[in-house]
Length: 345
Image (cartoon, rainbow, N blue to C red; front, side, top):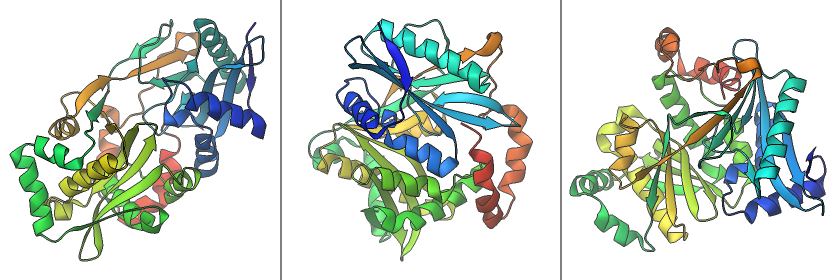
């Protein structure tokens, strides 16, 4: 018989991470450290459901975060604000037990729907969406080999950035302010509320060996930056930005080439460029590096069959708000943006 309980103790957390680290289908966002990130950076309630078999051995886990707001409603998401998450089990029975527990939890906390963000196809009777793909690149052992694979146009753009004497640093919290400076400006220019600086600071603190920042500088000023997160054999760049005032210097090309070189030298086998809509501008940008699309599967459970609200910036009904946001002073968007985006999973 399989039992499901919410993780509360330190020892349970250790058992959770041990299970995730030894599971072939695990995502780094299923690690216990992300519970701390969600609670400390956003103030969200978390529910980490663990399944055990009749021998009290862990046979499945499901991290859930309650995102609640008056404007958008109440959701249980695995995991919000990042690309992946979802359920991890050894068997269909464990999967069913965890999903049933999640549905019961949703009713208890008055969540109108549950969203699981998966990198693989699951066999379950929930509604699924395949509206995004993950762009991934298999890495050689040596960065020089990767350089030779790049198209000549791409190599020329990277050389241009170097010719302009742009420099690169890959460090941790020491350059967080530089990253956030570029990131916040880019989010404003895109018309999107920015995450709080504390979000990234908490990630760096929770994953000191796996999280890094790559930043590109011109005369000491940051002009492009990316946040790197490694798990097992994959290095991901979930957030990257450049200051469009310097785009003519190709800092973004130097940013990605430096991140790829770092991934090779650190022994990663795959570079994950993050999710994109197939055929979009970001899709084509990532494709030029040699990345290939991998389908993503987002599964939804809705209370009483209610339709799932679309709170993404791509929803046309937010068009006016996006236009207005782009015109706001940068300091104001940094002040009020975090309180808005914390409720948009």
